[in-house]
Length: 247
View 1 (cartoon, rainbow, N blue to C red):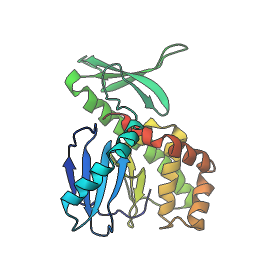
View 2: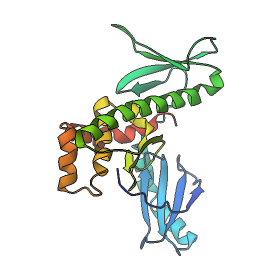
View 3: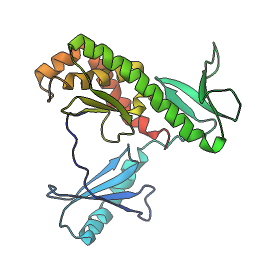
């Protein structure tokens, strides 16, 4: 979560024999050495290299690190597609996806509670080949609705104003705030417990007043969101797992 947006370095995508995930080679203008990491959000291996580094040197660096990469990839949870029968969280509660096909007069998605027994269901109507997209679009709209509500609450408490709220598939942050008061959030927050979405909304609203993460910024967040430590802890432990859904 950040006030500013860094420029994304150019990416070259490679398939490496023996690796179950693609390798993204990123040339970064300020990088001074080669670095390697496994991205849970992109489900890829990210190799960052200085601007003028020869690709052959990058290949050698990667070859020396294959065992390390494979070990890290084993820790990335399996992807869960938006397919019939898949179990995905909605506001922190597990739901089963049901692709119900075309049924005139029905909405895009209906939430069916499980009652006292059974798992709640997300019933997706329409052509089954479009089911994953329709569910994703619905989740994004639900995320925007919840975020607009919580941003308004926190902005009122702190006497601040957000100009615009957008929901996107952000890979590197849960939320961001521009200098002119525009807030952007990851739609995947709708998968997390409401407390977590509420915290990220409060965090970005506080950025409308404070550009940094200094003491005054955190006082503002705590003023409007007393349970911030609980939410931060949940994100730290479980946040990356949200990127496995809908891949």
